[in-house]
Image 1 (cartoon, rainbow, N blue to C red):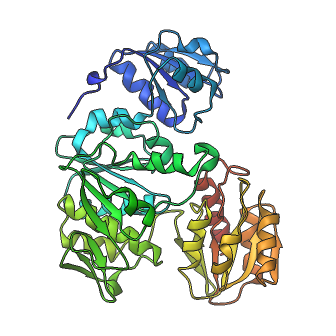
Image 2 (image 1 turned 45 degrees about the vertical axis):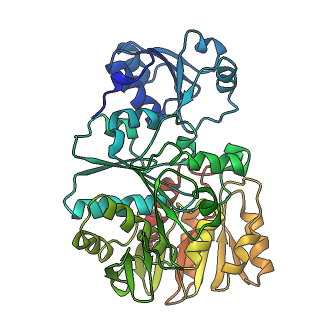
Image 3 (image 1 turned 180 degrees about the vertical axis):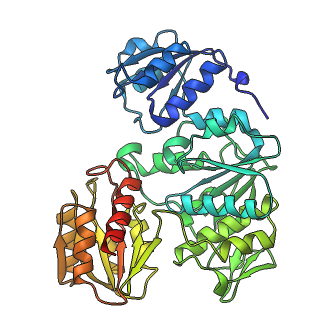
Length: 449
């Protein structure tokens, strides 16, 4: 296991606290680095600030003065801070490198990393790989965009352990030498343009997951995604494709009956309990990555015959008087909601809405054929109402929040209906996180009982 002392910088600016900034600041301070912290939102009397100062940090809160760059060799940036932040713009003028904390996690964990990214399916695939290795008695830890700070886990990683990392484009844009031994690239479609400014910038951030790989490393990639296949042709990585359309001699694939890895039957499709055709892609990617890391077929089968989904990602919540409630709060974009709607043949009451990023929802239209009613909320409620009306959905209710949406959906539902929260929008207009939004949905469903 590598040590953070290999980090070739002594004067570091940690820009933005929250979980990742606090974790990386603590780690660097504990290894005798000189750390300056700059955060806009944290109050100066916050206990975290006092604790960091006691460890030796210099802390500037409440504003972003350019003077925080004086004497700084590198910035470790919170992934949520945009690259048009004045501090970042000035740092680039001064040729100061800007990284995210996953770069430091790599310095700690080295070739022990399986990294997973994509526009959709990251959390499900990350969870599947972790559980498959666990059930195969392979020592493993999980971190990253899934909710646990990567460098915090990497610091305590044992030599024989694998670190499974869910990686967002925000994290991957800030890497230099980061190189997972096994990279998993699920899909690419236009997303987070408000952050990355262009689709090409977004793609290039995602492609950083394999940029530094060598022939000793593996790239598990979606062979059905033309954006990805056009990019991976000339890589040094050992390519391991997966496909739900074609046989993959060197990867994961399926037919009408079985899931395969290379030419080995892994599991009958009828035994898999995770719903949704889109999850077949996640399953194939997970099988490929887990097999490359030594997972057993028995371990993989145990997971796929019991795992019903990640919390907030097409999560079955309850059956109340024959109504099936699903929480897909993590569907923060249109593609995620398309995939959720494609998972059901029964009549659906769709609960949708949230932060308005300027886009319309016309791409949802082909997926609304089983939607009998929509309950809309948030900043995008008028846009969603329009697309519902244009597609012949006669029952459209406008409500204040997710809690009210649950009760109204239940009132208009019939037995065998699916009541689906799949917002197609980020949560930040009303909720701090998609988890908070999903938890409100779950609580409201349970109160119906």
